[in-house]
Length: 130
Length: 386
Image (cartoon, rainbow over all chains, first blue to last red; front, top):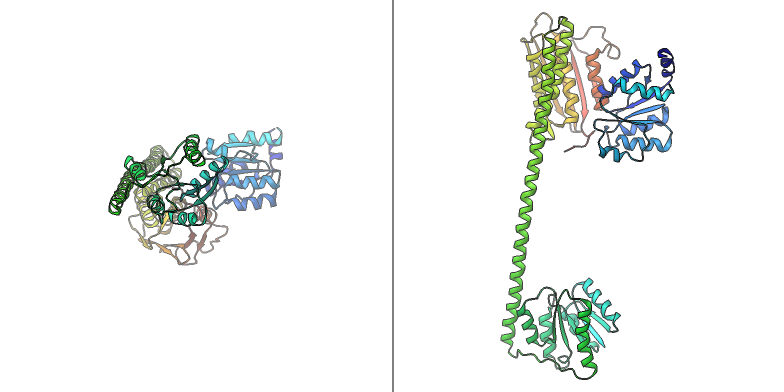
């Protein structure tokens, strides 16, 4: 199953939106271990919207606090309006305040940082129908 | 029955007008005594309801002039007041010749009943006009001044109380701000301490390591953690708890590296010069890690065999608000065939990523005999958070 999983996972296209480069790179590295390739990570909400609509990834891992004017919640809302791309929020503190702010934005999961391979694996498996 | 309302406040005028009209009275209105006098000259008025405190001509003055005028003195006069409510105000008003002295607020039914009683007497021809009891002008002026001064004193007392209240609130606000600052300082202090504890844990653990290479990696990560701890220390020491001096932060980083790197760099001088630049933590942190990488590289690789050497860091703030950080050493330099795009090791790649990705700036390696690079960044990517 591991090899089969990796073969299917390889076909996935994942976009990471995260303003801290070291966090983005480490996450992308973890996904690589699962056999999933990621697009170049994006630090700004505005660019994330542009790239998401152009590249149509299978999944977006979206940080909430980003560089620039637009935060992750706003970026997700705009992407969701124009395309059916599943979005997963990542945040330092999944407080009630943030959960209220993300209400109405359809996301598949809320992950609290730091995000580990063991958290990601079941999500990817679920996503691939394993 | 036509009633004249004299009242400066538009809202009160409107309410009174509606109330009286609804009860069958014809109503005209003026916003002060002066205008009211002119209106009485031009219209038949059966009853006057007047406020006291008004601009141009107040109710007391207005009443005096009505009672002095042979053609007007028989019109019933009602005071309706919110500010002059003293017993002595009432006495003065009645002595001037007012029929009624009503204090605001008053139930509409009671108000109407009082007006009604005068109106019915008028209609039945039973109304007896009030004469003014004050015939002597000097006496009127004296009493009138007394009322005005009393009003002024009340107003001053009121204002003094208000000032007192506001001073108290201001002190409370200052206290709250002070508490916020104390809280933030405490938070920075704890963050710094926690990071230092993590670094100490790594140091302890590394003392048991047999492998020199791994020990070196441990030390480098320890230094990065301490570098981040320093940001919090600098914020703690800063005046506004939001921005820190880049120069002082860099100075502390170089001191930290000089005393803690495995290859003790006694022969290496590090010099920092240039502009004082204040930055937010979002800018300081990545720049600190970048500087750490570059200086660590220089100390470890630029001066083999305990060579003497110098590292220079120059800070500059351009007119376009760009920060230019120029870092160079006088060591052996990068290898001859070094390719900027492919040969960056983990350290320099991290520097490039931090600068170009996280700070959206520029990182340039400058062709030279020795190592030389430039970092150009602009603040404003993040809003101040506190």
